[in-house]
Length: 128
Image (cartoon, rainbow, N blue to C red; front, side):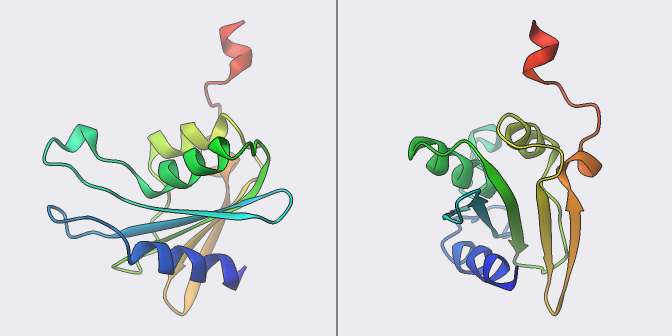
């Protein structure tokens, strides 16, 4: 999993965060081992900003991937930040509750499952 954290750190370097100065990188690994990365891209209209996890997920889905087993998140503060609620919900569309979520704390990392971070999610089943 150290490779996934490193990929998230590298993605973080491309962040565009002139307003918050809080750079975020994410690395999403598909079931077949392919890794897609993303970084946060801020906008003066904050609601138009893109989150790193969303960017990585969009790239993976665009390439035809629909099954994932892990995501790593790294911030400029190395504070172990988890994906926000919106990103958790986006991940839930394609990932099971057992998706591993790795959060960079520098020398350490926190690990959760998506189900722990977002229990009782809104799913496709709720819409039927």
